[in-house]
Length: 387
Image (cartoon, rainbow, N blue to C red):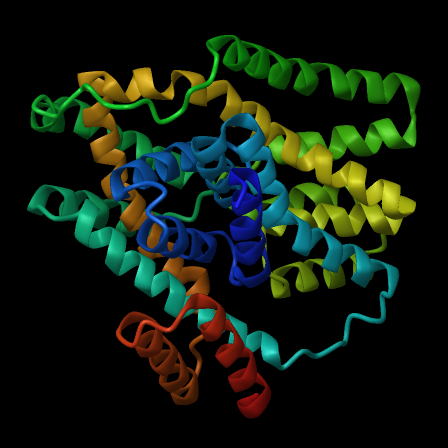
């Protein structure tokens, strides 16, 4: 099979099966790319996750782009993104076209939420064994876990990563000096690409609002609104909700009911939550609007990632940077556990039946080694039968 075809088909499978939001996506990626296919090891995966947690934008989508880039260069990254994102985009644009009403009740959604609990739990256990295997790294993960749950702030995740990274830079770098530096490069990308991408990111962020206000063109206004929303989101796809609401509801481009219904559906379909933009664009300007919205909201993620990746191997090979990454890799586990509790656990496990069914799914996944796609199907069936 052609390399690019393989990248696309694997990403497409994940795009069809990855329910549960950004944290659950990282669990699906870990299971598919690290454990099953071994396209990268735990250290490479945790480093990439840590980088994408730092960058604004859809972290899980950026991780998928990074893995595709590692496997097949820039084209591989783009193909990986298309495969993972396309199912969600198509589903949401079709739903927008056939929009019914906000009272629609999909009982199988609860089954998919149970699947997300099982998938994330498996990912936490797998990554925890590799990344938090000393008292120091366990303490760092615990510190981030407590910080993320106790302090209600959008930027606490980035602050926690910085704190643990600085600790690792000072106290953990000695542990990394013996690491073999003669290693194949993870990302073979020209540095010129990085400079051009970063320059374009900031240029568009500056020029688009000015151009939009001067011309008063709807298409330019839409592109500007979606691009800025994609550029300013830290902490996962859920955070994009208030940004998009402020951009499109007050202006009357989309009604409040239509907006909230679309967001509910975006959480029910697999793939990245950022494809909610596809629904909004479709509601405003049809298929062309949906395509423009999708490109605009994900473009910052591409520009930032392709801006950093050409320098990533140089950064990681530095003794200080390795200590820094070792610190934030521990905190990634803490962030995953915090997100596992809230919102995944708190919004899903509300009865003894919920706990019993998620325990069944977890055991089938973890110990009986059922593939992820079968767990998704079982979750849907359980949702229909019991809810």
